[in-house]
Image (cartoon, rainbow, N blue to C red; front, side, top):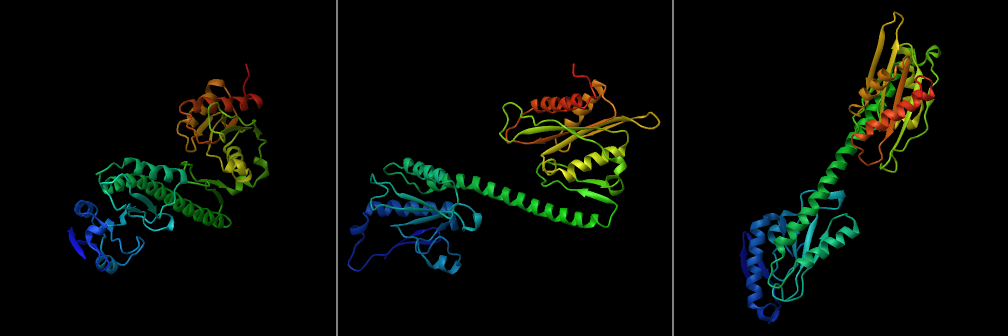
Length: 345
């Protein structure tokens, strides 16, 4: 057994009886690999795994007692998270006998990673393309793989956080619905927290009272130009003359129209004169910042009164930028014209 030191880890090449080092690795190869392993140990510390145990081993005793073989393979941990329950991502480097002096490239293998097969294949090919004769690949390959794994870790962590938020959200929704049976309000909780929609409470004495019932007009779906395939907007318009009318109409849309309840945003504005002729008006963005103000301006500038207009938007994955406000206002205007609240000229 020939030993050299790489940090605190023993680097050992174990040979069968009557076989010399020169029969397996040349003296020059042995020296270069010993130097590279010393650099890997200094750089990666415990992330450089012993070669004589599988990379998935969690036994500290096994790791301290095992050695890192000069002939390989070498294992480098690429992150700190066990992604998708597969274990910690690990790069295995299988070495040809001539490495690092021959033309034959080492073979990279990535363990414990769930990624797009094409992306994985391209990454492995990129690693092999980096190789050149007399070039040490350990740290270079390890850092390139860590860059890719860090993206996966960030995505995985974000997905886990969103899943936890949604689970908490569903728990709150169930609790709110259970409580509604014994309370004077009915609570609407949006299906997800991703779009900053608020939780809304509606008085049961209003939404269950037929005298506040409204006839709601719905416009055809509008698909904005240059938007995602699932992007749509629909306006809902009805006559209102008191806040009870507003509450009833909003509750009708959110509780009894499953598609509207799942919309990314349901921004709205209303404007009417109360019994004492006082102008009552307000608006709500429902998470689409600035949209409620646009709808309120439309009602004021067009002279529309005694009306509630709601615009439902289903986000299609393509950011529309400021142009979205033009489309929101345009859909709302179509609804106001169809309902006879403003002139179409």
